[in-house]
Amino acid sequence: MSTLDIAKGGEDMKALHMVAFTLLVVGGLNWGLWALFNFNLVNTVLGAWPTLEKLVYILVGVSAVYIGATHMSDCKLCAKS
Image (cartoon, rainbow, N blue to C red; front, top):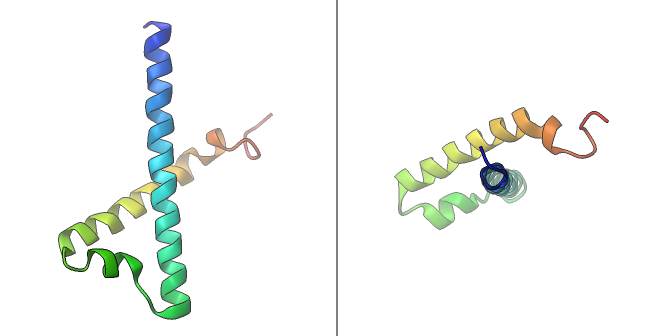
């Protein structure tokens, strides 16, 4: 495996982490809006496409699991020194 392959894998993992983190933020904001204002942003944006709306909820859940499982190795504050 070349250095280029390793660097490319790192870029792929960074992209995956950023997508998962973004979905986690979307999910958190949606829950906050729901709790404070009884407003479901995901449903408002994607309500016309219930399958896509459900897919977003599934991806938010999978993202939460991914971030939870990889947090210790990704977080500079939580990583072991």
